[in-house]
Length: 77
Image (tube, rainbow, N blue to C red; front, side, top):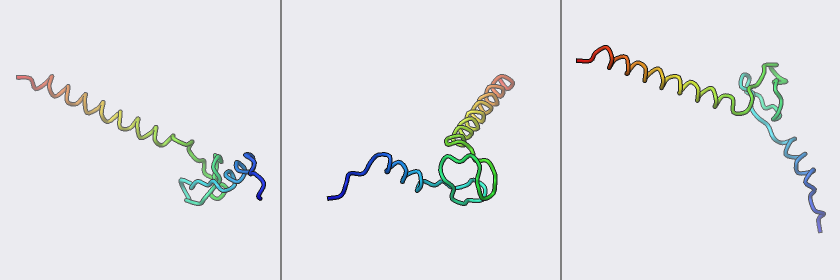
């Protein structure tokens, strides 16, 4: 019968096997590194690009709303 697997062993194995892709050179790097060891460029924090996309969409919606409001104010009959 095999001995039970310890939680620390599972966590260590996960950390060794968990990889992410560099945003610039697309090489695989361990999760948690803030700088790619291959190209030396800084990596964004997880979820940071999603936050940027959300702010961009919000900005576009607000600008579109302002443009429509100005159109209705200036071209009223």
